[in-house]
Image (cartoon, rainbow, N blue to C red; front, side, top):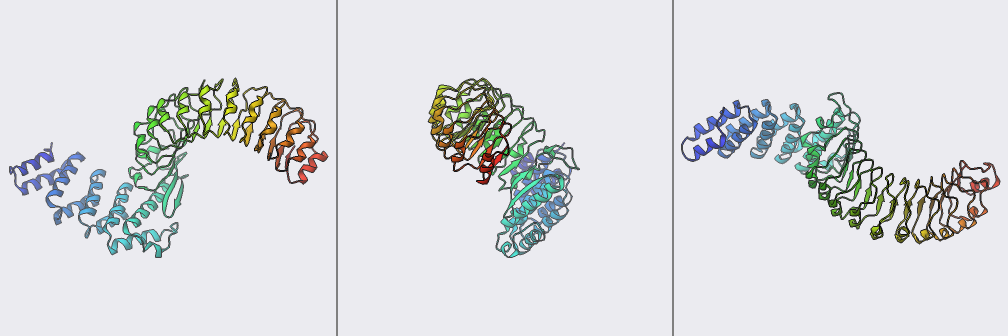
Length: 491
């Protein structure tokens, strides 16, 4: 049992022991204690006493070469580079070549970058240039500061680390920096397939990492180290076993895209409101029945995907999302649209498909800024006349319903480019469909058509028409004429 290093130092301050005794006792703790905290605290006390002393340099050097404790070695690497820049290069270089701990290697590289001597700079340039995957010319490397060279070598070292340990890893590198890291579906020959074992604590030194994919990894919690990567803009955690978001998510101050598709969320914790930089949030295929009020704090959110959950009504907190442009509520149990829905003035794309008993309210037509509307598999028998109020509509998906006609007002959708009527009950198309001059794609497979209306030929922008699974003769003259115009005909 060793005395606390701070108590020993206090005795020295109070002149109860002399300098020699203090150094002797602290050194004894460093060499013999088993508790890392005590050993590091002793090193801190020695640093105050003899930071410019040759003996302290030798102590740190020996710890770098022979120390077993990971934490103590990291402390020694950091301090020798800070306190002894003129002498630190040799032990740090040894550490780079011989140290088995990847985190220690990263610390050594960063410490070498701070030395900024001719030797250290030559070393960094050599280690970068000798790698075949590193594409920055040596002339350009020579213009970089040592700190930038060390950052580049850190990124290169991470590339080696992940490619060696994770066989299917995908790494996106731009100008020497790792920008994207795909570690989905981890399998490797060194560990069990557990991503927690493979994410080093020094991951935070990937200062320009923007996109991280950890999908398909059976994660039950978000690794703590991920929360510390402040540069992250996109975090993809699809197909895991997550049930909650930690309050520490607030640290991800640059995060714009969060994808939590196919996890085990029964509810969404209030901490989601802390990530107020979010632009896109995907919560599809979970077990959510409601959303927390804190979601309304995401004032920059433009895209919200809630497909395949347990919603029986549209959560009212959504009306606070004034920047929302895309909302996907498909495959839920929603029956009607609330009155406040028309307040979503920024909404441009909405998917209400696969809500089996959805009643299409007249207030939908008041969302005149809508450009893409999906109402597939809702069981609808007819469209309301006021659908034509959606003047900016470019795409509408009505497949797998019970429609046999379109309202005449439909002809006023003058910006419509894509119309999907697959798997309905149409036996004919109205002649006035030629009024929709903007139409580029018409899908009407799986209906009861016997012929193609003459008016189809008057659609100047038509590029694709799908007529499969109807009763139209595939070699008819109209089909041939459409094909001659360069239109892709599927029949």
